[in-house]
Figure 1: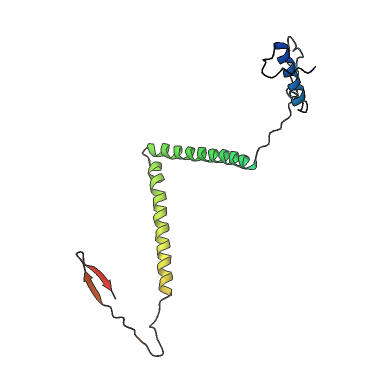
Figure 2: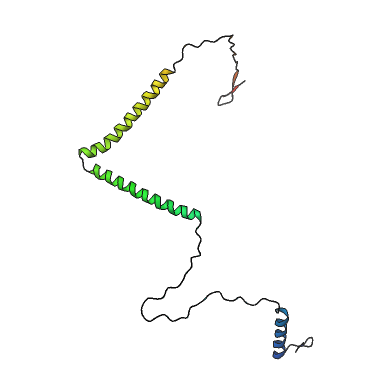
Length: 163
C-alpha cells in the first residue's frame, strides 16, 4: 500500500513507517546480499581427560627469498662472531699470565709482520734495480718552447694575474 501525504501536512507514524518501507523496498532491492562470515568455531566438546585430538592446520605463509637469506646470514655472522670472541678470550687468557707463551703470543706475530714487510721492500728494490735505464739517446732536432708570462699585482691583498 502506498501512502503519500498531502502537501503541507506532516505524516503520521503509520504513514511514515509505510513510506520508509516503500523507500527501502524500491531503493535497495538491487543490492547484493550481506557477506557470509568466513570464520568457523568448532563447538565439539573436548575430552575431559587425556590429550586433545590433533587438528590439521595447513601452513599458508610464504617467506620471501631475501628474508631467508637474511636469516641465514645472521646465523652465520653470529656463529663467526662467537668463534672470534672465543679466540680473543683465549689470547687474552694467555696474555694475562706473564709467561714465555704470553710474550711469544705478542712478539711472534709482530716479528712475522716485520719480516714480511722487509721481504716485500727488498723484492721491490731488486725489481727496480733490474730496470735501470742507460743514458737516453735522442735523434733529431730538439725544440724548446719557452712560455713568457707577465704578472701584475693589484689590490690590497696583492692578487696576481698571469697573462
